[in-house]
Length: 476
Ligand code: HEM
Image (cartoon, rainbow, N blue to C red; front, side, top):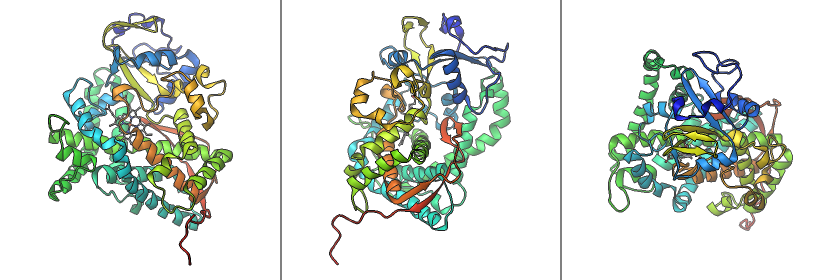
């Protein structure tokens, strides 16, 4: 971003050792930009800047300023940096669309029907069925005494869940020993988008050419999977509107009937297959990590599951919503490691942020969510401590608005929030009820970054637990 867009940028602190041309590159890790930025926020305060090659980025983690940035009359989502690079593969899909692109609003209005409460109730049995594929696989591991790869299996589960509920498609993830090639291609696309070398002026074209061949292969693969998903549906002559694909193929904008075109539908399918599973997988993995490390929290969560679900073989939709403590544990994991760790807000017109930082129209700032979620004024003197009771209703009400932002903000906030929360609480409930978790390797948290955050190398061993007997077991 041109420094002239932030006339007072010289007053915003930056890391001490700034190198001419290269910027703030000393002592940072190319593969961990978020964790580097979290460290800088601790050292420099909740408003700071980084210069990476030619690019200046202003980071904000101050709760008051984040609340200002949430004001839709003054600020708007800006598609820059890695999200902009993802447009190579997801184009004008919902996540990567510019806010003023007509297809953003059209896509949002057509797809909104896929995220109502009624839609969640409809997806619930499929979510249960996918979770049962996971437990079938974990039962075998438990019987053999083999460890489970938590992030790997959560990724299989969440990919199958969005693919089945959204598109009626089966990736066969649990039948494979290696990740589905779609996942491999997706990870490459995300890592490519995160590559900081792309920030060097001019290099983008040259470097892009050099890696284009490899990346284009991955992008091509993603597209071919998606085209196959759409082809199958249309070949079947299926005109139902019960899932995301049905809504896009067979309905239009409420009121006008305006349709999404084929190119945009392809972009939306890629968007939902990626956005709909990667972040939820991380959230489940972090939650399981904290539960495995906090037996007292795990015991409380499990007691709640036993009480609310009793002996029900399969929990109903409402029984999942009633798992309030499990939900608090999930929220607390998302506080510490919000798996989509940032979002960008740009000034709609010249303004002054917090009465201190002048911004010209178009100037933007990146909200660094994990640092916001560790603000001591808001979260107390030990923000690193895992404590689900921070999310007790009275404590939530006592906190200012816009202090917990794992799903972003405003009209560009996550459309899949309820989907993710329902899926994750359901799965945590099923796993806690069924297994004792053993931290057999005394795992030390290592967070890997590929735009999203994920624990790396996290394994558990399991033993089957005796599930409470059905409350109304048939006689005999
Ligand atoms: C725990 C899981 C999830 C987290 C932490 C998360 C986080 C986020 C965040 C922070 C944004 C805003 C990004 C920005 O402003 O640039 C976002 C947008 C989005 N998310 Fe999620 N998400 C999750 C799950 C899901 C799921 C399950 C779906 C789909 C089924 C989904 C689909 C989307 C889409 C399409 C957008 C773009 C919305 C728009 O701009 O209109 N997400 N998500």
